[in-house]
Amino acid sequence: MNELTYWITLYFIQGITLKRKNEIYVACYKSNPRISIVQLFEDSSLWSTLGLSSEEINLLVNAKAELANNSFLAESLLSQGYDIIPMDSLDYSKTLKLNLQTISPSIIFTKGNKALLQEPAVAIVGSRSADPLSLQFTSEVAKKCVAEGKIVVSGFAKGVDRMALDAALEAGGKSIIVLPQGIATFASGFKQYYKYITQGRLLVLSAFHPNAPWSVEFAMRRNPYIYGLANEIYVAQSDDKGGTWSGVMDGLRKKRTIFVRMPEVGERNANLLLIQKGAIAVDIKGNLVVFSSNDVLTQDKKDRDDKIKQILESGGSITSKYILEKLGLNWSDHKMKTYIRSLSFVEEYKSKGKIYFRLKGKIDQLELGL
Image (tube, rainbow, N blue to C red; front, top):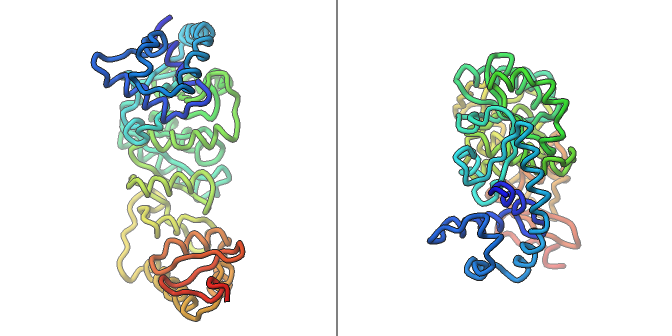
């Protein structure tokens, strides 16, 4: 059995988190002399040295029963033209490892031009039910990326994902599809995009068990891999919750480079809120939008924040719905709560299971139970 069999076995052990599996492997890698993935399974004298708990040792022992099945799986995948890339391979994406670090998938399954993993890449993300303006933006940005020699990464969902993929390929560019399912279950997709794979312009990638069917859970778990493979992220359209919103907020916390389409007046999405939180505004063609102190974006935010401060200064038990009503905004309550929490002069507290807001340092009578 080759090393790939052991990598597959380690990766799919149930009961040990991905982060912990990666920590165990890093400990093997840094050991002097280096401990191979095969030795990790076969030399029990090393387990205490690596700091494995009794529970982890039991899981490792039980996992060895899967080695024969995983050996057959590895041989079958390789014979069908798939690649199995563990995180210590030179073929593994350096960008993915840099962005996700300890939660990088220990192993990825691919088909196509794996050299694309080493090229500069851009993720174009957004809603499955994106409006025509967002789809136009996606197409324009995809073509812009191709002209700049960058790979376009997408998740193969309807809407923005599919538009990003097709626009890049039609423009003569290259792309990476990140699947929310096992790579061996993508037969129809391989048939549809076979030409681009043979041309070396497309790589299909999965971090899930090769035979796993599509699922909502995998679609959500797949999103960080899309963001992680990219050097830059473009957002066509985001709601104030869901996968796109979560991915962008996580990226902003990590100081990632994220561009968001500047919405038109009256659009019902969270693009403007993401820009206000630190994303970089771009126009319909993906070019930077430059703001001055007199711009509507800046002034609208200042006016809104001043009004919220006035409402809170009036005292009483202030809820997000109350503030929303006073401002007259066409926002959801969730979006209003998210925005209020982003303000430096506001803090929240709970009373009898409800969430209230106040100016920082101001004690409300309701909170004191009076």
